[in-house]
Image (tube, rainbow, N blue to C red; front, side, top):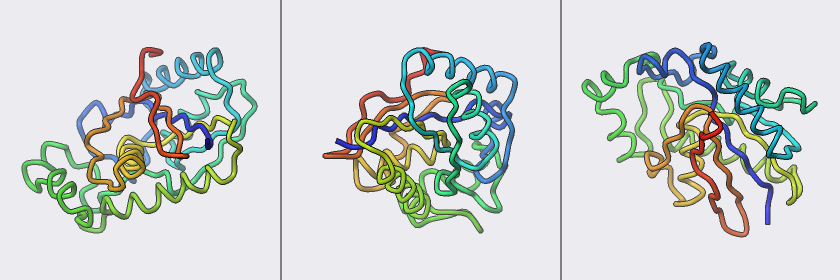
Length: 200
């Protein structure tokens, strides 16, 4: 047995509505995103016992964590390793442009070392996000549940590495805004719930 991870993707940001890639871009939650986080908090307070909270330092995750744990009297621990995949010079580009002009998703998936100019590769994201999860796991007891608030790609990469030993399967794990996913790392990595958002 190991720490029980409860993964929460941040609430909606404007870029999610307009189809733009915001990785390292520090975007705030929309009105809908704040509502999603508040509804998630209402669900968690009723159904889950959480002992610790970790979040990406980007404001959309910190705000989501704050709303989702309101009243729990838990500090929000920030970890740089939980940040979203940075696309460098291609930040804020539309997904349609990334596909049509650069075939980015296919190239990055086919070659995990491929990156946008001044951006990160899937391999680089995998290295830091997996290290963050290992660090969290080492700091908590087997019977503790830890809430991890991060980003769609970062969490998908982590799941892909733990289940398939490679970030290349990240596309199999789409996570909606404020969806919840539960998994454990040992004795073997296992996902109990994936991308559940009925609470919204």
